[in-house]
Length: 379
Image (cartoon, rainbow, N blue to C red; front, side, top):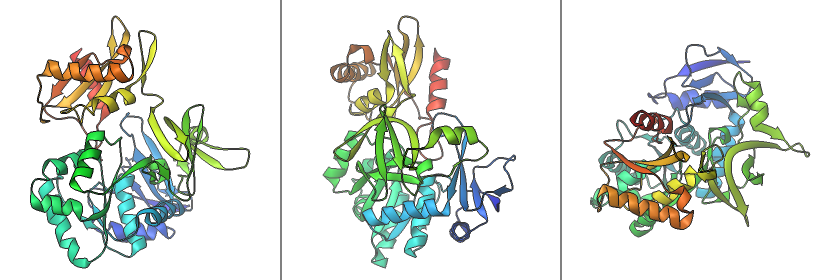
């Protein structure tokens, strides 16, 4: 057993040294741990990350030093090594992996202090160019949208173009953002993964070199050396989510629906983010992807509500700050038409709710549970 030290992820100063020790045998670091956290964890553990994701179900994911290194090394093999900008909280695996990759590359990550802004991003990035190293960073789509909205400012555009690769994950990348990146000459890499896979392990649909992905009954499952050991204090959940096949290979059950087409992974959405509307199953993830293609709704979130006629229905929630060229009713009609054309009339969202600001987690991802509760209160 090794000692577990609760860590304040909000203060990354000194984290690099502490993480280096954790990767080399301990003590292990605990991120987001509450007062009932154990003082010791199994040998080999480097970090424990308490995460509820966006659904509100708490889990404590146990990651070994071997797993974190494997994820970082596979990333370096795919996109290269260099100097990293840390723009995400280190209590989330995407931010933590920026520090791990920096350690393995022998570099010091540049930490973006305070609330994320385009000006701060540019101010932190441009001095990094003096080091003549390849620049890399990891962002979530909401941060990317903020940068693109400010790309008319030459320093912001220069900073965006300075990166060899900007890894984007945490949620599906809306098609309009992908198109804007291409127009601006910004090099994006779409990532897919989770805390249980030590972060992104599928880049632009292609698994990293040490990763295997397959589907079983429509669910994506992942194997590779970067898999978590399991969930601290929950052997039942660990046994259910991590299983071995007839060859002894260990697979992580992602809970995501998708397929692997000629080696390319295509994610369709969460298996548990499905409503039954009028007796027909509707994937809210699929509806949301279509809605986000509508101008002005790039950052929208689609949640479920009870419906007296259909049983369940979906609602679009979007921030008023997005540039709307149509009235609210026209915007909803545009979204409903787009969904009907691709999925069918049964999947059309019932309402569009505009809010001053969407609730988000510290990682920058939408807090879907908080958004769903707020919408339910309106009903």
